[in-house]
Length: 631
Ligand code: AMP
Image (tube, rainbow, N blue to C red; front, side, top):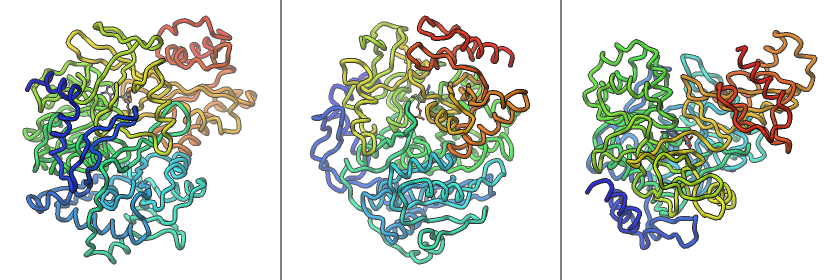
């Protein structure tokens, strides 16, 4: 079947289509209804069915591939390389599950995972899935305030963490940040499990903190059967930034997610059981959930979990791993490729990369020079794919597993099966059917399996934020601008909201502004995303100081800039740190007091700021122009 027919069937007969895809996973109890969309936009997949993500990722492979590699852990930070077969992974996950149960974790309880890229992080995720606890992984780069707000939202019974991570050879302690976060949070978890890597000293809180290794010893022979969960039960929540300061807990189901991932490995990634998948993401991001942990394992593939930089010990390390573990499918982000591009190109020729079938890149726009450079270097297809934390798997790409389709530079591709993607006019909501018209990329319900169920504990926010932004219609907005060419290929042109994308990581400018505003000498602040040749975008902050007299000279300004950066580091984490903090006497606003972020951004990027008739004081934008021009 050609892809066009495959896609048509998926949207015209979703029940038939997804019932077939559902055969890719094991079901303990067959489902009785494929798709329940009686209460849009809440779509329920595979009602009546019972299954388990951990069973599908681990147990079901024991019969055929117990000794085969499942998890390959490589840390170039601590020089550790450790391989877990499916059998060994099964044992470790049961130990972790037994420890969690002994800590009183029950089905439906939340477990927050705040960990570096170590195998125990994957064990913890799979152990939660096994016993029906809901995991909420928080990216290790987030600091105490970010972590505290997620603790309060998830209200976890237990937290799994570690003494430290390591980055570029430098130890990054986790435990002090965790302690501070728990102190800041209103909700106090009963139990904290700590993996001690021997990297940083840890203070233990008696009664609350436990050494994971010691507890594991008590459960070496643990046998914890999988809890059969309803397909529509919650598997996990993952927080993502929006336009308000409060992060949203994207909530995902069990059965639909398992089916979506299994189908994507076959139709999009073309991975086969027994092969090796290497995603360079982090378990703290959605790509890490779908394509480091669950996706490859559900498909019976080995997955590489890599802790380290792409250029340490040298720029060949990833290719060395591709050769060593005969990686067939690789997944990374454009920023990482741009980092590699600055290295000696000889690294790409040094290793045998003949196992590699394709490199998938996602998370941010893929620019043509970067795509061409890596395509020439690797000699394999470079496959851009566009999706979001909310979707869980690609929305736009090419499904070469269904039918070989050409990729076009600059375009992630065409709508994936199950997705009804449209372009709508931003204000009238009218559908744009012609070629090359710019509109908001939206998805019509029912959304496919794997797509978010709702915002954790906040159905109203789910409906109002995502489904009601286009007047008069119930459609899901991606908050991305896009155009479609005459062949049906989409091009993504950036966000319609105040979310920015730094090195493939999505950050809300509001969160960064709130953090900066907590500095004693900050009266007002605007944060915008500005184009950057390496990271795609960087955050740029413009601050009005309370006491401008304290900013008399360049030294004083630098000092305050440094203080503000440190504050953001400490509260949100270095990922959110603005590239520069500049001082102005007023910010560009409309007469009604709304910040003109798009105009500031345009000026920073040397573009025309557009219509400024609603602007209150033109002097404000001029100040920014002068500052940026002088830089
Ligand atoms: P996140 O939820 O953190 O994965 O961020 C999702 C956002 O990243 C999307 O809404 C887009 O703005 C951007 N994005 C992801 N993948 C791509 C891509 N392949 N091309 C362009 N933008 C992308």
